[in-house]
Image (cartoon, rainbow, N blue to C red; front, side, top):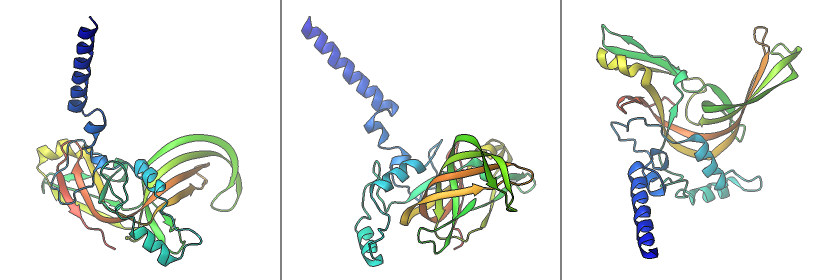
Length: 268
């Protein structure tokens, strides 16, 4: 009886393992996840429901590498140390020097379709706020990728006019990109041809993809405070981390089908 039970248990384990591999569950099934692999910027189409790398995951991996310049470390020593870590591992098959791709939140842009021209068009700002670099020598354009509401409280603060007021204080945890190679406020125009029937289905699924590389200092603290005004007696604090990112391409794609409609190189 014990022999029969052992055979049955072994067969059951093999069956569950096979199911997990087929369904993408488990370590081996996750190895091919786009979030765990370098991005191929030569692709002409993406996988359906593509989501790219996860900002918070990459932040966690970069922090473990201790890539921030030490106060007592010369610039030359820092550059030498970082240069030796180009192949340092992140998660999955990713390396520090690999091409990464991040999907920008849908609410940053709105597309409009011209049926007479069979053309979809839109525009958006590369960044939503600005941040000082770690060395506080330049202003970087930031793009918030995700934010999590952390709660509210009552307090006193000063309005933009300098008057002390009582307000509701809202806290948000943020993960963002600090774009190292673009002007602080750069608007990108998007235009591409698409048949009306296809456009009707694709419009609500269109997304923007930022493609590029991490560059020194690789990671920075993020902080933005939205001060109260006469029409809005609230103060919002957005704090977290930002990956320092060299933006090399901007893609427009249908997240439902993975079809890529446009690739743009941003101006420096």
